[in-house]
Length: 145
Image 1 (cartoon, rainbow, N blue to C red):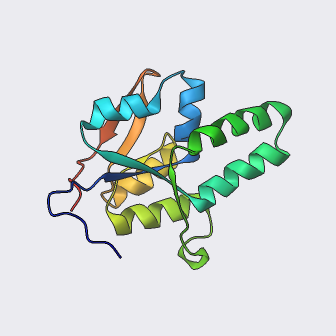
Image 2 (image 1 turned 90 degrees about the horizontal axis):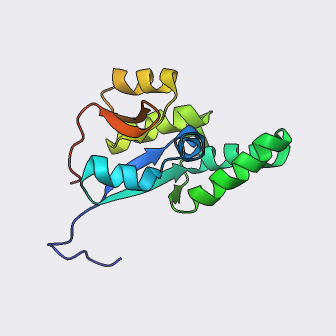
Image 3 (image 1 turned 180 degrees about the vertical axis):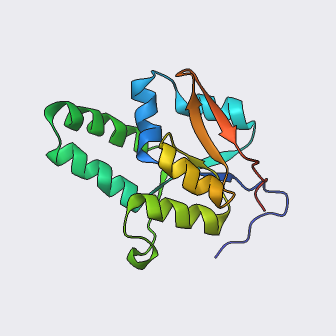
């Protein structure tokens, strides 16, 4: 284990849901540039293994259009750090996101209305696409410790 320099800034972790990656395709926005503009902080995008597996399944078994979109989204996912959370931690990708965000106390980027409500109910900040053109935050983001 290497020690971090005392003056090294920690990155803010942002968990991405699959539909956050689809937003780039659907609304033709650069989500990383939008995150930089919105957060004005050093951040790291994270995709949970369960979400990645869901996208891989769509890329293999979806309709032809869905397969093509999923393959594009998987390319975008390569910019994220993949984190494996244990199976007992969650049965579904949404459950994995809720549990990880709650434990890590980090924001989630999703456009899923139901997931957004679940996250806000446990005081997790949510980043989402607003007016099909830019990102917005619902909640307060704490700086990384």
